[in-house]
Image (cartoon, rainbow, N blue to C red; front, side):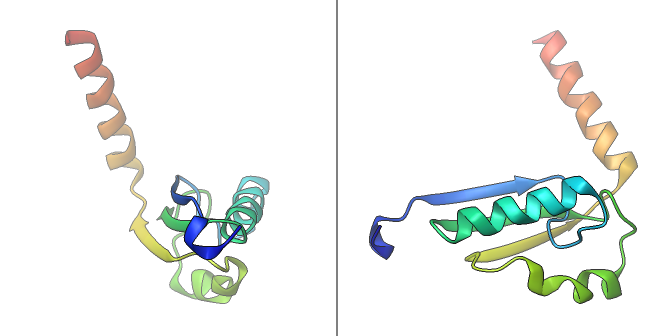
Length: 95
Protein backbone atom coordinates (compact mmCIF):
# COMPACT_ATOMS: atom_id res chain seq x y z
CA UNK A 1 0.00 0.00 0.00
CA UNK A 2 1.42 3.39 -1.00
CA UNK A 3 1.62 6.09 1.72
CA UNK A 4 -1.07 8.14 -0.07
CA UNK A 5 -3.37 5.09 -0.12
CA UNK A 6 -3.21 4.52 3.62
CA UNK A 7 -6.41 4.44 5.59
CA UNK A 8 -6.60 7.21 8.21
CA UNK A 9 -7.62 5.88 11.62
CA UNK A 10 -8.42 7.54 14.92
CA UNK A 11 -7.73 5.02 17.68
CA UNK A 12 -9.28 5.97 21.02
CA UNK A 13 -8.23 3.84 23.97
CA UNK A 14 -9.33 3.84 27.57
CA UNK A 15 -5.95 2.18 28.33
CA UNK A 16 -2.49 3.72 28.01
CA UNK A 17 -0.89 1.61 25.27
CA UNK A 18 2.62 2.65 26.31
CA UNK A 19 2.66 0.96 29.71
CA UNK A 20 2.62 -2.85 29.57
CA UNK A 21 1.86 -3.37 33.27
CA UNK A 22 -1.38 -5.16 32.46
CA UNK A 23 -2.22 -7.64 29.74
CA UNK A 24 -4.69 -5.18 28.27
CA UNK A 25 -2.11 -2.40 28.06
CA UNK A 26 0.38 -4.74 26.38
CA UNK A 27 -2.22 -5.96 23.84
CA UNK A 28 -3.42 -2.44 23.05
CA UNK A 29 0.19 -1.31 22.51
CA UNK A 30 0.90 -4.24 20.18
CA UNK A 31 -2.33 -3.61 18.27
CA UNK A 32 -1.63 0.12 17.84
CA UNK A 33 1.89 -0.70 16.57
CA UNK A 34 0.39 -3.24 14.14
CA UNK A 35 -2.08 -0.68 12.80
CA UNK A 36 0.51 2.11 12.62
CA UNK A 37 2.82 -0.06 10.51
CA UNK A 38 0.09 -0.29 7.88
CA UNK A 39 -2.05 2.85 8.22
CA UNK A 40 -2.04 6.49 9.30
CA UNK A 41 -3.02 6.30 13.00
CA UNK A 42 -3.84 9.16 15.36
CA UNK A 43 -3.91 7.90 18.95
CA UNK A 44 -5.97 9.27 21.85
CA UNK A 45 -5.61 7.53 25.22
CA UNK A 46 -6.30 7.96 28.93
CA UNK A 47 -3.17 8.26 31.06
CA UNK A 48 -3.59 6.54 34.40
CA UNK A 49 -6.27 4.06 33.40
CA UNK A 50 -5.03 0.60 34.40
CA UNK A 51 -1.89 1.90 36.11
CA UNK A 52 -0.89 4.80 38.35
CA UNK A 53 -0.65 8.08 36.41
CA UNK A 54 3.08 8.66 36.60
CA UNK A 55 5.14 10.89 34.33
CA UNK A 56 8.21 8.73 35.02
CA UNK A 57 6.35 5.53 34.12
CA UNK A 58 4.97 7.03 30.91
CA UNK A 59 8.39 8.42 29.94
CA UNK A 60 10.08 5.05 30.61
CA UNK A 61 7.73 3.24 28.18
CA UNK A 62 7.22 6.09 25.66
CA UNK A 63 9.28 4.29 23.02
CA UNK A 64 6.98 1.24 22.97
CA UNK A 65 4.33 2.79 20.71
CA UNK A 66 5.87 3.68 17.38
CA UNK A 67 4.78 4.86 13.98
CA UNK A 68 1.64 6.75 14.97
CA UNK A 69 1.03 10.12 13.32
CA UNK A 70 0.02 11.77 16.60
CA UNK A 71 -0.51 10.93 20.27
CA UNK A 72 -2.96 12.76 22.52
CA UNK A 73 -2.87 11.99 26.24
CA UNK A 74 -5.92 12.74 28.37
CA UNK A 75 -5.71 12.45 32.15
CA UNK A 76 -7.84 9.65 33.57
CA UNK A 77 -10.27 10.52 36.36
CA UNK A 78 -12.38 7.71 37.76
CA UNK A 79 -15.00 10.15 38.98
CA UNK A 80 -15.28 11.93 35.63
CA UNK A 81 -15.17 8.61 33.73
CA UNK A 82 -18.15 7.17 35.60
CA UNK A 83 -20.12 10.41 35.88
CA UNK A 84 -19.89 10.99 32.12
CA UNK A 85 -20.97 7.38 31.48
CA UNK A 86 -23.92 7.82 33.84
CA UNK A 87 -24.99 11.02 32.09
CA UNK A 88 -24.86 9.24 28.70
CA UNK A 89 -27.06 6.42 30.06
CA UNK A 90 -29.49 8.97 31.49
CA UNK A 91 -29.78 10.75 28.15
CA UNK A 92 -30.46 7.46 26.38
CA UNK A 93 -33.27 6.55 28.75
CA UNK A 94 -34.98 9.92 28.56
CA UNK A 95 -34.52 10.33 24.77
